[in-house]
Length: 289
Image (cartoon, rainbow, N blue to C red; front, side):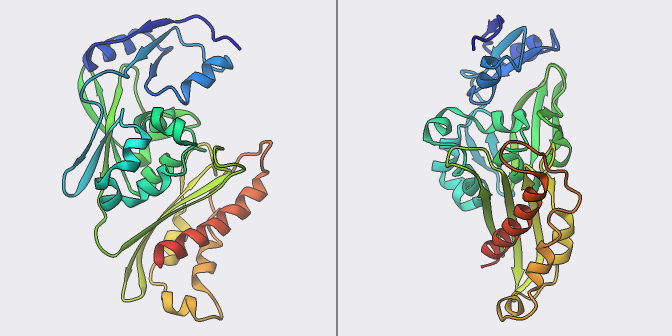
């Protein structure tokens, strides 16, 4: 299908991009285009103008700031995957990014585009939620920080105001004692997740001291599995592996609490709830190993 007509703008600076975006409510940002272009072709989006950020300086790159890693919005998935800083300092982001679509998409798709698209079936929003990332947006009035817990407002709706451009995100470095895993169930290697689980577990002397669990495609936004996080605190991992009653399995049985999974051609809500419990158990065990 052919997209509806629109104006095309390629700004020379972030400030100019902000001004164009503030000029109308139906102006869209184009970064890698891997999420937006299919919507245009199917006429599910009707922007009056596209603002192409692809060649703007300063929005691409990965910087290690000690307690966090800053990832620029235009950094591609492939650049995230090849980054030694990401692999060493925030491995959960690398694990999830490796499951995004295929190499062709990862070479064009961007970190910021995935976040700003706010698709609950996307892999990276759940990671941002689990790690308590902080997004940085810029407008003509200056910069604004948005915690991941507040960034994903509704289905395909980020907390970006008209005239704001996503600059990037601060990804916290959790430090020693943490284990990470991203578990995903999908129909094919290139497909969206039917359900995904981002897990970070901090262990000490064989006991879970803290857990952070976020779910992909279990509602209109990524969801923190708070009940699981609470139930895992203090669990003795040695007893969980020794047989008998498994406290990890019992905790992960609450993974679907507070969720509202969608129904579509690929899965019913009850099947997604089952997957959430199973995949959370797998992710927690892998992150705890």
